[in-house]
Image (cartoon, rainbow, N blue to C red; front, top):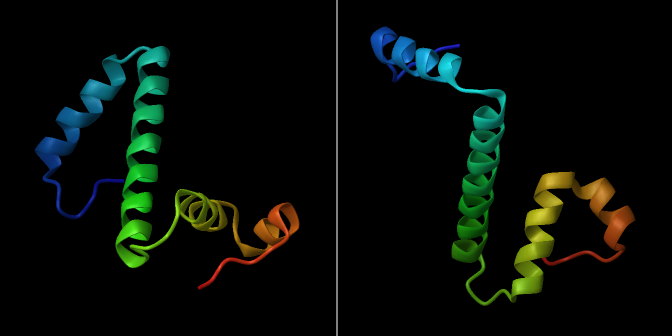
Length: 81
């Protein structure tokens, strides 16, 4: 599905690049995007909670990723909102 801010021509170019990639290259790209998104989420948490420790940032990110119910079951305690 083409993003609204991407022209049809640019979208076709991107798709052709992905079609030429090997499965290993596609997997590597997936990991790179995942790492980028995690870093962006961490940056947002740091901006919203500038005094947060590394542990609190980890916990806030983990709660965001796995959801509050599983977080409560896995980590027991709650972190400040």
